[in-house]
Amino acid sequence: MRLTKGYLVSVLAAMALVVLLSSLRFPPTVRAGVPVFNLEKSPLNRDPRLGNSFAPVIEKAAPSVVNIFSTRFIKERPQRNPFLEDPFFRQFFGDQFAPDQNNQTHFRREEGLGSGVIVSSDGYILTANHVVADADEVKVSVGQSKKEYPAKIIGRDPSTDVAVLKIAANNLPAITLADSDQLEVGDVVLAIGDPFGVGQTVTMGIVSALGRSGFDFDGDNRAQIQNFIQTDAAINPGNSGGALVDSEGRLVGINTAIISPSGGNNGIGFAVPSNMARTVLERLLTGGKVTRGYLGVVPQDLDSGLAQQFDVPDQNGALIGDVLPDSPANKAGLKSGDVILSVAGKPVTGADNLKAVVSQLEPGSQVQVRLIRNGSPRTINVMLGTVSESGSGPESVNSAPNEQPRTDAMDGVQVADLDEDIRNQLNLPDSVQGALVTTVDGDSNAAAAGLEPNDVIVQINRQNISSADDAVHYGRSAKGDQILLKIWRRFGAQGGTLFLSVDNTKTPH
Image (tube, rainbow, N blue to C red; front, side):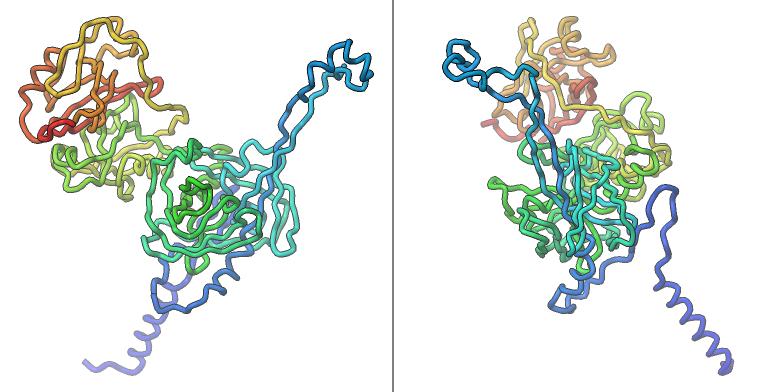
């Protein structure tokens, strides 16, 4: 077949059109009440042969980073010398030291410094929640001119340590947001902020890790939902709320915390991913509060023993210890012992990561949950609910049970039958049957696996336990390198079941 010149021209023109369309950036879908972001979802150009200067990148991103000044007025009554209240002393010093008859309250001014990022040209700013928490006044300094604007706190989300501010200004230099899900360990990042109040500063590093969680920063548990980007770019006090940008100047995170005994940079800093921060902003603006997807399970991390017990190839995923009654997970058929591998196509690496992934999904949306059950993969569709913001950590029962504990097969563990007094102390549902753990030797294998006093052993190696005698019997007869325990544990006002894998080969210390 002969190809005519006109035919070849048409084919080449069509190919050129396809290339052109694929390179175009289409504006995101506009949602009512949400500003239009500069959003790029294309992956980073990772060519290592790029230039030796980041000056063009900083020139692009730095004008979008602002200084935030917060002021808090703390009520306090002045302390007085008690001798000056005495009339005997006042006859010498006069009434100038007499008590304040108006009982006047004085205020102490407390100021804070942080950073923020302009994300829309009409004045919306992302920052860290702890920068503006409890502030009575917030001011924002913009650009090299350092023009100050009073800022309104649109909303705060302590669970992610994200806050949204608004200033009355237009034509502001809004930063371009990247798709933080496309970040990879090793990508170059730059932190922009105002550390220690010295002025806008840029530091460079790489993405050290992704999906970091489980931190309680020096007792300040400022973010319960943690899915941090870890970086060695220097982050110091005053950087909080500032921008973490990629090597193209696009926002990938909001700087929030460091791990440092001294309070200064030690090369371990954390940022909230830009996708999570953007989700918080959008939900605050559209609904006035942050709503989160709710699955309704009590998850836990996998260790090597649990991965072996549940036929999981590695330690990625979240093991369901319990499924809460009337929850979306319960209605969809998820079960205790399932190992969740992904939700809505997003991989799940652990219990904290599962919470972060589900929290960013829309309540009421139907998602696919990919899991392993009894060693076999399967996919279940779940209609997510809305999360309850209440919750707390495990409680302990202070009073010890009266019954004399009996020795368990696992060295260092003592158990007792569940009587009425114990059930009342634990507020234990009638459906929970087992043996109460009264003592766990801190050097035992069971303690190393995570067993705690006041846990209720429900199963040993998948055998139901109804009494302390059962626990002793099945503990002594258990075979294999690992003993699988299913326990019930109180979590705040509620409780749920968890799995523990206890080493059965090592002698306790």
